[in-house]
Length: 316
View 1 (cartoon, rainbow, N blue to C red):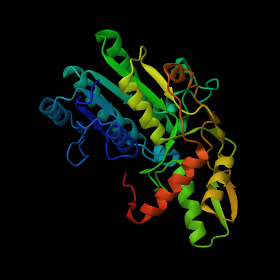
View 2 (cartoon, helix red, strand yellow):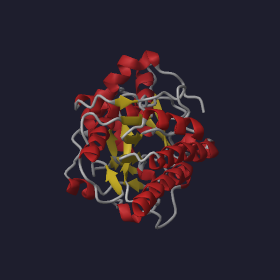
View 3 (cartoon, rainbow, N blue to C red):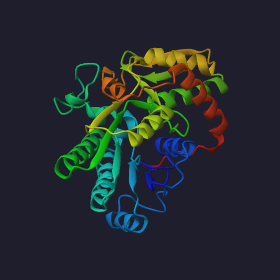
């Protein structure tokens, strides 16, 4: 890949897409293309075909998705299943038909079975049942992984799937109805601090273990995947380090400087007991995450404070 390659980043305004855009710009890749959802509806197959025919990108990075936490997945199952499949199918199929040189598909660690052996290896995909609270999103993403794998197998094309663990960072979704656990905690602790509440109530028992990756590290991994040959289809992207949700809450509580009590609502679901990625395959390729969770939470909270005034509630 050279610096003049035309690179289309689907979802370039989102948390992941904007981080990838900036990482490529920092490395002097200046021939970047991005369209907002109002400019190009990725669920519209004909619109996607026309866009590709006009722009003729050399490389496509699929960072576009309908995302959300347990609550959003539970409440909007059809939306999460269908919209994600429409978006990725249009991008993958059109990229193949337009003879795109390289396609990077971004998914999520939720594609792996609920009770798969830890840490999660790429080969445990489809070996047992998924976590019910996010199976709709997971099934959509699994279909994308398999679409890229089948293209690689049938046509010999350079289609690669990268599966990041739980992401966080600048441009995250802080809406309490649709956000993931880490940004939701940042907002809850901050608002409790501002309103001088004596306690914050969090979902579940606090016992599940989770791994978190700063979105800048994911962007770095995507650039690495663009610049280096990958011989297989599927690679985990993570830190290889996890902690309990309780420990995460205490870390965020300290960062935000909230001095009240944490109350755990055990009537709410915990989700998967543990989700730690085996990242040895990616490390053997020569890439490793760099940003510590403590530093990442601190910088994310600083970004939240700077941008709090501009947040909008997410409509499903």
